[in-house]
Image (cartoon, rainbow, N blue to C red):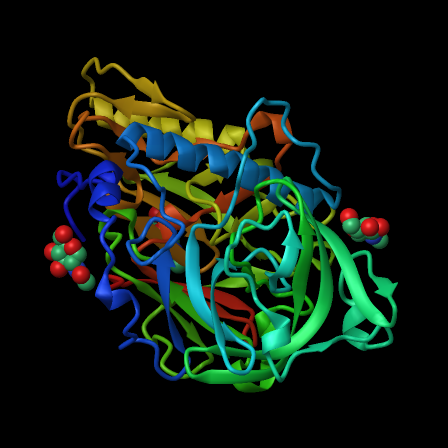
Length: 438
Ligand SMILES: *[C@@H]1O[C@H](CO)[C@@H](O)[C@H](O)[C@H]1NC(C)=O
Ligand SMILES: *[C@@H]1O[C@H](CO)[C@@H](O)[C@H](O)[C@H]1NC(C)=O
Ligand SMILES: *[C@@H]1O[C@H](CO)[C@@H](O)[C@H](O)[C@H]1NC(C)=O
């Protein structure tokens, strides 16, 4: 582990402006063999969804944090099982997940870049003639010889929200973030890395409103019905892992490894908790948080798992910065500030939603998330965002927004970067190990 004195840098401004040229490495796929897919950050040079103009570091960070507000609102709606009342605000909040993988759909294959979402079950993607989709290259069912509609009477039609019958074909509506989506339920061959998955069931989007829908669709890695895990039980045995590359190294790709083969052996595990009422979400039992060597004082109800209210802690691939319910966040933040100041007087500043920022170099303590059976100690790279240009360093976590009545602690992707996170459903556990994603 690196010493806390090495405060490393996230210079999105530089990376985004460097990212403009096309990268020939994006199309050759040395890592896409067997059941392992490359994972790209949406801001990666290999992502067509990277920002079209250079943003300042502050602007990028504030934008990612603002997207998280939408993401938290969405997760809270899943937990509360009601649809979202959009936050009253002039601007549209998008919450598209941060990491994308390449999938080939149909015969002959059409390539789409799907957003990975561990808190969603079904996959869905924009189809030809979709009204309100932003993709200029939607999936064209008419060009695929293996495409077919799912009939109303099919069992899959009972697993989607609000199913309706258009003719005899199954259609459904759902909300995602602040978007409303109308889709047909369809099947086609989906190829992930080199594994063809025949008759994969997914939503073919006909109409979308709002700006939350990922431009080329979404791959649901949740644990509920119609998710990738549910549809590939024989092949992948409900097991996958990923390594998410850091924002600092946008030219690196991570990996999504499907199935029990080649998963790490040396890894610490914590049990998954089952919440029958929120079947998609990966709940774990976080029992305490340590800042440096001190376990901070958090009221037990702030961390407790409650299947009825949905309270507790989840791992999520789509939220960027870890959110803790307010009493937990305040306790962590106060101890963090105390350790950073180390008896001196240091001015704490704000940046967007981050309330613990410094305009001078700091020595930060480690933060340890303590789960049942597993302590995960995060090095500074997973805790701090730092601009070399402005010289601003912030604690990269925040309190759950108070306007969504959130009861969830979300272990988000910035805190998972450069770790292998293994979802092992047959043994009902999640594993975490340090790994440098390249
Ligand atoms: C789904 O959305 C479509 C298009 O907006 C609408 O025509 C249809 O009535 C909706 N169906 C349900 C079940 O809400
Ligand atoms: C990514 O960029 C860094 C610095 O720009 C360079 O050192 C590194 O070799 C690059 N890595 C890859 C995989 O291209
Ligand atoms: C986690 O760390 C605490 C000390 O802070 C220790 O008591 C506990 O045994 C550790 N748990 C595991 C599973 O290593």
